[in-house]
Length: 183
Image (cartoon, rainbow, N blue to C red; front, side, top):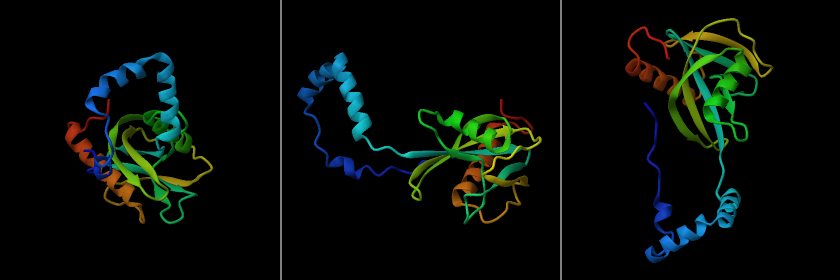
């Protein structure tokens, strides 16, 4: 179950487009090796970039792992996660954050929730993961961690966290036969 809001493409309708008779010649020209590098450089300079945050909905049976974060003053409890590093893929970043913040490894499943967050502006991606409970080694940015029953979560939680947990529960209920873990 992915959350995919309808994208507003109104701003794109007013752009001038390349005349159809020019498309093929321009495509051949861009395929030329030197221009390919110029195009790649222009994309890096001109195309807007966004921060990407990743989170892990770490499930163990009917419980979810939540962390009390030092740097989240308004809603201290949340999911393991953080910012992607330069040239880091979302799945690798999610597993890295889980390991860094808790010392735990997990079996990562799909992205179950995504949303653009305005403050700070970033794309948030939440993965579901099956995590075996074990001794926690918390990083300096985590005050405490605990496994909470899915029907008894601490408050306040950010709306992103609530919706990611709901999406992970829904995905697990439809994707896995009763009693099975991610594989």
